[in-house]
Amino acid sequence: LNIGSCYNVTDTGVLAIAKFSCNLKHLIISSNYGITSKGLSALLKQCTNLETLDIGRTYLSNTSFDDMLREGYAKNLKEIRLYKCPNISEGIMERLAAKGIMINSCF
Image 1 (cartoon, rainbow, N blue to C red):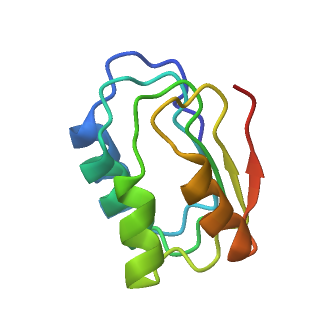
Image 2: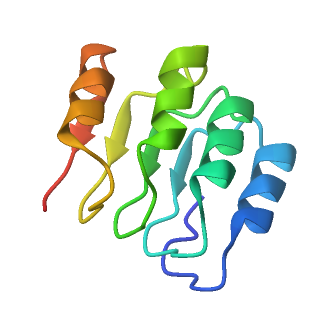
């Protein structure tokens, strides 16, 4: 599903995706500045088949990934694209990579 650059997408939309698209494997939500870590955490928790996630050019932070790593959900996630995500730290990228998740980032 590609909703990248759909500028009016917010947590409400992401929560609907999480609720009704639990078998989703690939999601692009890049360039959506209305999505917060709360929405992303819900998505990662409910979309257990998600394999690739593109959150480039967002203001998302480490919080949702901290939750994911601590709670152990999104076990099928294989790749995250994080280009131009200034609020995602190198430390969280290293922790994700240590779980076998390929990180594509370009700052």
